[in-house]
Image (cartoon, rainbow, N blue to C red):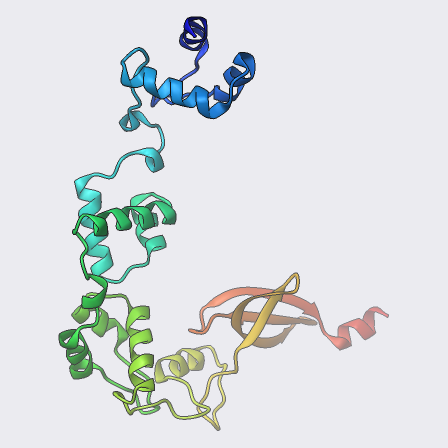
Length: 253
């Protein structure tokens, strides 16, 4: 055993946080399991024979312990209903690390029942008091509601859908119409139906047999080519595809 400890002390390779990097190689050399070598290293670190693990020295943010400032930011963003992934992007950490940290914060009572307070009666009453609809029955002031409630627009949209389903909000969009905001945008791009006052229907854009997104497609002919404009649901241009027109094909033939 003494020779094995001497071997470990001599040949162990540690990273910047003093975590062993060559456990597998040492286990093979000593004819031991990786877990037994790992256990021995941990005990040597506890006995201060080997340097103790110090995650604060990590070169990568993901491996650093969470600070009090980060915990506070997580709690505040949860109150505003950001997703774990969005919080992770803000803090430079993975979604899973945020999920794990939230579990720990709940375990120690720092997030007790936070989720149940997101849409309490006060918040719902505030939403119902301030919500506005356009003439077609679509919510017209998501941006304003976001500021009033301190949550993201998509969260409010989901809540409105639930309240409509439960009969709390009885104003519903008119069939075969679009929001006035969307219609105005499409009018500026000359791509909506004057008769029905509705923007073009959404199409499924597929790539390699997989649906990527729902898009608006507008066809424009120019210089012997057909330009297909792909726009998102708000009418914002995503990309343009060029295709030769049938007449151009006939000329080439």
